Length: 251
Image (cartoon, rainbow, N blue to C red; front, side):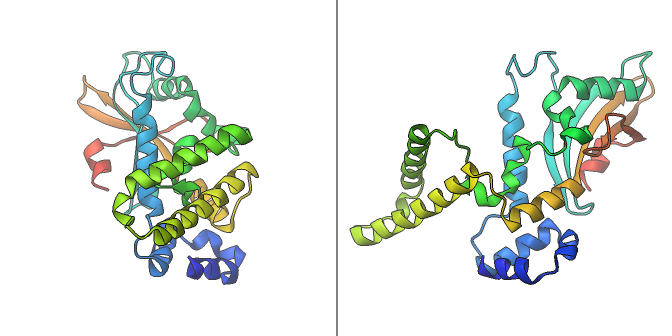
């Protein structure tokens, strides 16, 4: 991590946009081979977020059988939030159909609105690795008593999930716990103060560039597949093109 901090301080600010997430991962690996990949944690958290929403009646008020999934494409250097297998409705344009589906998913549609583009998207939180403890993205309530319970619960989970790291040597065990408690309290202070580190800013800058939304539509009458595509902050009108999911999947 020291190497990455040195990079952030010495690398010209105007060049930050040229550093990709995969390059950030590379620099972090140099410092700590066991560090979690930003791309892997971001993709896993995003998919976990949508998976938890499946079957939620309140969330899925319009009874869509499909939800979004998430995928990072190395070839395209894009992070996609996409929906599969939507059937084309007769006498309705593809743009109309896709736009209506997106609007019904407000938590995603807000991201296309330039005036709301600043809002934090929970499904992208996994990329901000400085807010992750024990492989989980943390959130707090800004209520001291409740937050202390959350912190204690996280420490208990850490002990359970890392039993193999503890030994009969209590002094070493206490040192390990103190190290994790220090890390956890640092995350807590950062989240409560709503501060952004240089790494956070760099990751957000990259996500603003690489995130894309897709809805795949199948026209069963012509046996043709299409995709509707959006870029955050660019409005709700999609760009439509012929595209099979298999082509996208292998990219």
